[in-house]
Image (tube, rainbow, N blue to C red; front, top):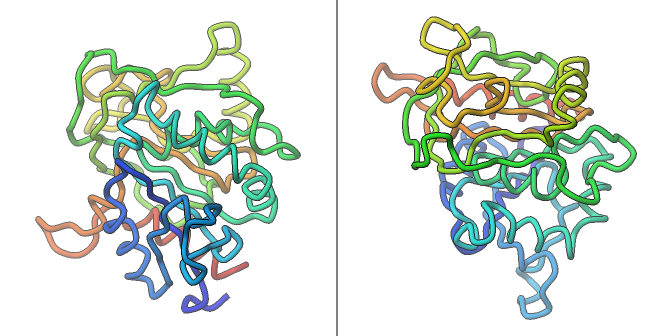
Length: 268
């Protein structure tokens, strides 16, 4: 697929943010990136020329922010609205091999939606959540630099990453990856076997460490995972905020996330 033909939808509802930065990151590669409100996919109150189908796009992005004020739980309302009107289409979208990215609040949405960890390739959206992003161990909003070690080369969003350690900031209050206690061992084994653990928090020397390097107390230092087909990816850090390296010039470490996705789409 030619880059000029690639279309990316960055989804938004009340409370999402960083949409424009995320769209601009994709646009820098010459692809089309559009900010799309969720209602444009289903509401009959939207003007005809503004109505959309998810199949108008080749990639979906759930951006960061505080969707619907993060009431109930972070990402819970956004995911419930998506699941109620788009579940079948979204499952088909995933089965077709089209990628989905969830950044921070977007990761929370994908977890609540049941799209992650996404072990079942035949049913890419689980009936109920199989993981959660819980309140940080510190009990406060953590906004800091984080260092990430790439664990999987199979995730389509990291195939262009050549660096061993990436520097990407976090900004969240609920980013602690947790699984049901009775399933932790089984889930971890499956994630490792399937190469679904994409990033883990490390210190500046690349060693697995606790707080503040692991900013939320996440299980197994997990910062980002993908589904079993490696096309649905959620991470807590914000790659769109370090697309450029404003200190040294050129591109920052977030650049490689978007580059990987675009190169994957070119091959479809």
